Each structure stands twice: as C-alpha cells, then as structure tokens.
Image 1: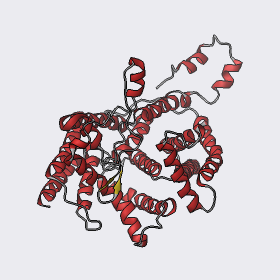
Image 2: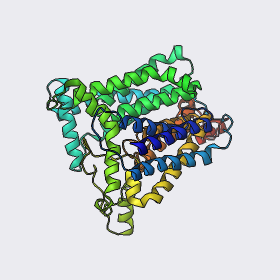
Image 3: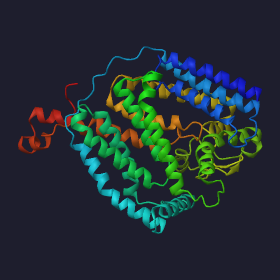
Image 4: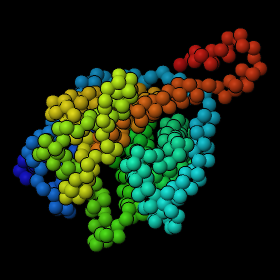
Length: 434
C-alpha cells in the first residue's frame, strides 16, 4: 500500500507538470494520459471490490510508461504552437448532408439486422441476444452485420463530427447538428456495446473544446460536467439493457460496481498478473502489428499465426479479457520496447494535437478520432488498429480536401462549359485560393 501511495503521488506530480507543460490545456495528450492513470490508481484503492495489492514492479512499469509518453509529448510540444492555418474553405454543404441522409436511410435496416440477431422480443432481451450473437460471430471469425450497416455506424459518427466542426452560425445550424448527433447515438446504442458511445462523446467534447478555445481545467469542467454525467447515465442504462444480470444478487448496486467501477480497475489487476507471470505470455504471437503482418506474410510467403480476436480470459477477481494499453507492447517488445512505443505514440499524438490547434478542420477531425484510444489506455490498446485509422484518414482526406471544396454550382458549370475552360478545370484540380 505504501508503494502504491508513493507511485500515485508521482503520477499526481506528473499530471500537474504536464498541465503546465501543455500551457494549461486539458486536451494536451500527456496531461490526459497521466490524469487517467492517476484516477485509476486512486480508484484501485477504493474498497468497493476486493483487489489484491499491485506489485512494485507493475507500478513501476505503468508509471514509467506514463513518463515515456509524457517525454514524447514534451519533445514535440515544447515548440510554440503554429499560427492559424490557411485551409481549403467549405464551399458547399451537400456532401455532409448526403452522408447524413445515407446513415438515416440505413438506420432502419440496421435495427432490423440487430432485431434478427437478437431473436425479437422486448428491447432489453433483443439487445442482450444480439450482443451474444455478435460476440459469438466474432469469436468464430464471422461478420455479424452486413458491410453497409458496418460502414453506416462509422459514417454516422463521422457525420456528427463534421457537422459540429463546420458549425459557424449555431442558430441556423443547430438542427442539423442535433439531428446528426441523435442518429450517431442511435447507431451507438444499437451496436449493443459501450465502445461507440465513448468514441462519439469523447470526440464531440474534444471538437467543441477546440472550437470554443476552452482549454483550462475550470473552463473545460464547466462545459464537460453535464455531458460526462449524461454519458455515465447512458452507460449505466446500457448495462441494464444489454447485459444479462439475472445471476447477480446485489441488484443495481452490484451491477454498477461490476460493470462501471470494475471495468475501469480490473484491467490493471489483469496487467499485474501478466507482469508477475511472464513465462505464460512469452510465446504469444505478435499483437502489435496484427493488422499488418497477415498481409505481409502472404506477400513474403512466411508463416504467421495471428493472435485470437479476444485475449485470454482471466479472473482478477472479476473476469477480464483486456489488460491496459501496456500489455501487448510489454509482451511483444519487453520493458524497454514498451517505453519506446509509448514515447513514439506520445510524440505522434502531440504532433496531431498541435496541428489541430491551428484551426484546420482536417486535423481537428483526426485529433477527435485519436482521443478515443487515449481515453481507453487504462482499458485496452486501441492505438494499433492501423487499418481502422487508415480508413478514417482516407475519409478525412476525401471530405475535407476534396468534396467540400467543390463549389455547389461546379457540376452544373461543368455540364454547360467547354472542357477547355480554365476556371472549370481549376475547380476540379484543386487549384483554389486558400
């Protein structure tokens, strides 16, 4: 317990240091990274569920990882923030409205697919059954939902981000903004999990803080306290609806302890087990590059055994299949390799943060996407979903650098103007004034 308190105090100091190193900006990645671990370390000592004491080496690994991440952020963040960027203007709103109506049109079909997976019945039983069916399909290497519905889930969240980013006159655009957020929330709810909820809410909060320039702890708390409370309520309600809690004897209190408090703290206990039993994990296949190695193995013709979709289940003392952001890097590369990975991730995310501060909508969107893996560091590693982030990057490039820069009347002008017309050709080659 004394060692735990000592390392918690070190994290407190690191959190305060990062806050001022980031010019008192709550979105500074190093500040958020240290703050999350500070909260988890404090919650771990709470007597709600009986957890074993963490090993001193485990505490040292986690705190060293936070320090390495902070060092990477400091290397990039010590330079002065860039001046406001000159960006491609938004010349039409047709593209984002098309995306919105596409998602709205797919929503009923998505509900019908979830209903079929859940076997019908009431909403609670439907979502519980659908979640079990989805997890079983993933475990068997199958795709539980159609491709168009899977794409619509992602596009709905991106649509909400775009509407909030591009909102200039709220009294005129609040209807579109609210509608896009409600559609994204509906998709999130029907996924039967909490991941999409967190991704959506965290991204929207990050965008709004960037757009409103409310960066201090006091300003950010005034803005975020009610959305965070609403998120906690939604997560609690979703547990009661899409989790089978019939076997729990403690009622709602035990449910919230197990699925809210336990979800936050148990992965750290699981990582402590990994650190204490290295021989059980030394022969695991590489997890860090699991998105890249299968294609590389086919191209170079070498044998590669991919890791399972879900990690091994452990009772610590609650069931868990996730072991914080550190586990895969620690098992794949050792302690020093894990520190290098944290340093590089911190540097990369801070570079993205600095670009978002310039006001470029393209980088604001990407930074909002990057906030989700940062918020999940105490739970699981989301940074290595390379293919997923490449899709977000491609979508951002297509929308912010191409689609929205085409003037509303460009297509009509193109049909009526000879192809040799210089002004028309410029509008399609991207030679516009910035």
